[in-house]
Image 1: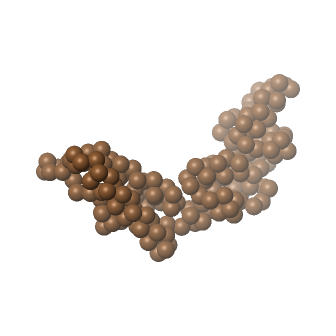
Image 2 (image 1 turned 60 degrees about the vertical axis):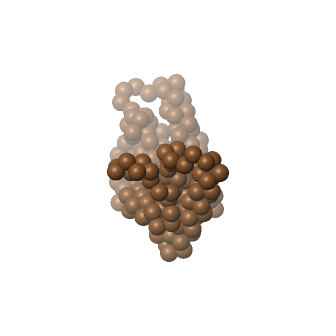
Image 3 (image 1 turned 135 degrees about the vertical axis):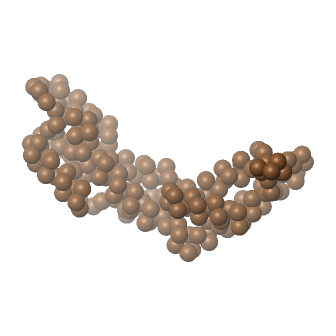
Length: 193
């Protein structure tokens, strides 16, 4: 229903294009993510549609889905939706926040980014993976950022926390053993780089 109390018209290509642009302006995203947004919009319309005949409703939904596919294809062709650019920006932000390469790949996969595009967007340097492990250590106050006495059991728990976050054993050991001054210096380089 519209605000005037009349039934809303079925989504057409123009209304879906407008909705897609509004979404991209606010959130950005991948092709698959944009397709999901438009599909949800169509599903909301279908739930509230004042079409009693199920066959007519199915035809209207089918036409709207075709229009949504056309909108996504047109926006991808124009460069407004670019999975590679989205993946690169998101991977960089996630690495700075302390996400491991594995966690970044999983996140991008959930957003509908193809595996090869996601892998190409990952930070290359081993230093960036170590910096992400240090950022996670700082956020969780483990390893070099832990205060007080550190025994073998505490060290094991710290390593386990980094392993659960997706870091390799080698990276986790290096991050945990790092002096706090070196860890802070690495984090500053990560933020500035």
